[in-house]
Length: 137
Image (cartoon, rainbow, N blue to C red):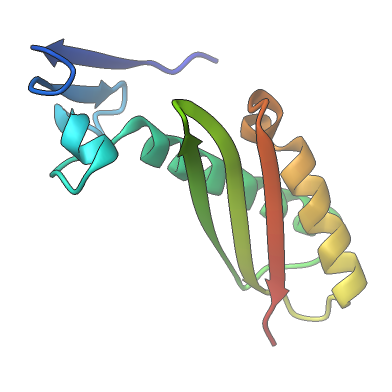
């Protein structure tokens, strides 16, 4: 399986701007710029897209592992924050709030940790990843 996206940039890094389009067109000429990356400009940025990818992948992996273990997740909600420091992505912080009937805290934490370590996006990232997993009853 291959997925693709295209970036088009016009102008200098600080004064120019670009658009991103994904194969599915979920992003369709979505604006990005220096201001949207480093300030409060309109549009997205690469770090936000990394955060979305990690949150989505981790959540799906958690659901798969829970299902394999015989649990039916009612709700899995993941927030991901990506840190960019001195021009390098340094950290992905995952926070999971989950409602999973009949699971013990121990089993939940074990499954969430395994999902963090084995989802394809986690595996692709070479920087640090953290997880806070909260089981909500």
